[in-house]
Length: 66
Image (cartoon, rainbow, N blue to C red; front, side, top):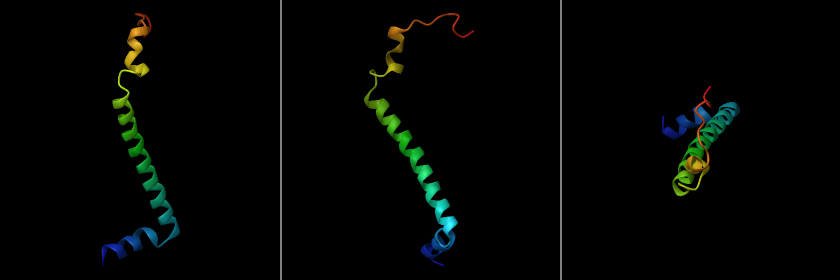
């Protein structure tokens, strides 16, 4: 059995299996793409984001954690 026919019989032969494969692949792609873009954004905007400059403007309160 070739790889193509095995792939067809596993994923694409029935509608529900095809639907599950498409949604699963989309979900995995979305997580990977978002993670990559967040790293890219943080790298090229380092020092200009609130998380990087917060310490310049906000003083930590000693009782804040209580």
